[in-house]
Each structure stands twice: as C-alpha cells, then as structure tokens.
Length: 135
Length: 169
Image (cartoon, rainbow over the protein chains, first blue to last red):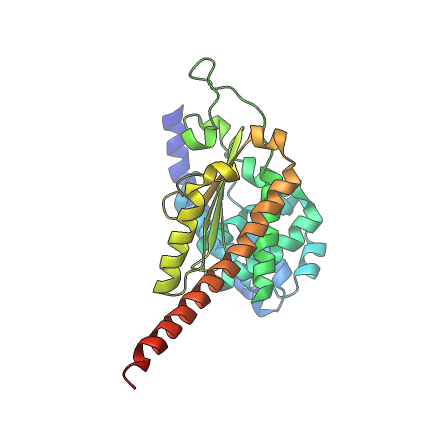
C-alpha cells in the first residue's frame, strides 16, 4: 500500500510540477495586466493537497511568493478573496515569515494582520494544527 | 521602522493567542508522570506545527506548541560586538533567575537568545491574556534595556578615559 502510494507520488510529482509551471506563466501574464488579486487567486487554487514531495511544495511556494510580493492593496485583495482560500493563504504566510528575507517578511506581516482581523484566530489554529497538508 | 515592530508584535500576539490552548495531559509512556510534551517530542500526535516568525535577518521568534505546553524562543537584534556581549550577559542573568519568572526556561533553545516554557499549570494559575501581554511587553522592553546598557557602557568608558588622560595634559 505504501509502496504503490510512493509510486503514484513520483508520477504525480512530474505532472504537478508541469501544472505549476503552467500556472506561473499564467500568473506572469496576469501580473503584466496589473491584476495582482487574480494572480494570487490562481496561485492559491491548485495548491498541491496531498503531495509529500518537497520540490512540488517549493515550486508552488515560489509561484505564490511572486504573486504575494506584487500585492499593494491588502484590504482590497482580502475583500475579494473567497473564504475557502483563507486557510491556505495563512499557511503560505507562515512559510513566508520563516524565510527571514526582509521584504518578504514585511509583506507577510502586513497581510497577516489584516487576514487575522478578517478570518479570526481559527484560521491561525488550523494552519498550526494541520500536520497532514503542509505547505 | 516602528511600524514593522508593531506588525511583528501583533503577529506574535495573534499566534500566541491561537496557540495557547493547553490542557492537562499525563505522560503516555510512563505512569503517573506529567511532562511538558513540547520538550520531549516523543509522540508526534501531541505536537502542532512549529511556527517561525522573522522580522528580518537578525530577529526571529520560534513558537512550538503541544497539547500541554508551549515554548517560545526569541532571537534579539544585535547590531555590533558590544551589543552581542551585553545581550548574552543580560539574558544569562535573567535565565539564571528563571525560578522567579516561572515561565522562563533556564537555557535558551539552540540558536536563540532566550526561551519561555508555558505549561497548562501556568495557564490554570495565571490568565492567558496576561501571559501573552507579559511576553510581548518583554520583547518591547528588551530592546530598550539593551540600548540603555550600551549607552551607559559608552558613557562610563568616556568618563574613565577622560579622567585617565587628564594626567597627561
């Protein structure tokens, strides 16, 4: 069971990475059209749910990071984001905060404050408690 | 500059409010023992994801939670060699008197300057909000304390040097 699971993982990883590359191209074009909110939505959409593969997670993180840094209007972005993406966004924010890179941390801290006001402490707790779907 | 400090402290406060959900949990391996699970890390089902919040390259805060205990480790900003020594000595002074603080850990976690260990017993005796206020206040005050210490060291050094060199005038 575990062996077949691992096998499926390996195949899926390549497929997932190609999908992430498609996503990143789409996001680049959206950013050029000055639509950072759409870009972030696209980045968060196909977040690899069950992958254990570090490469997929890093690849997706790079894409989300690119979209996050392009956001200037945090309030507008949060009001137009669906609530189902709040949890995923919080997980990515914590990943951003752990990098230690100054501009990333500044942006992540800004969004974190607003997101906590909107989504509440439950969002933070879900990102802490979810050990299965990590980003 | 002050804005990032405010955001950093708000983020830590919110994370602590969410993470400080502690309850009594006797040890699973040994009868009649009650240990802070975050220190032992023997059972993964009792631990939550650790969270690292960085303000910049120099300052960070690691928050690790488990079912009955929470560990907060801080790395304080140290811009030069003198601040390095002052921080180390000052925080060592505080850590040695950890009994008086109750929530302080005697040795900081590897890679950090100071650590706090909060258990469910602390949460039962003391108010959760007050504990969080204490930690955040501590973080604000530590920067002021270190700069005050640095200033007093420089002032004393200047006075001593002036006095000493007067004899050569």
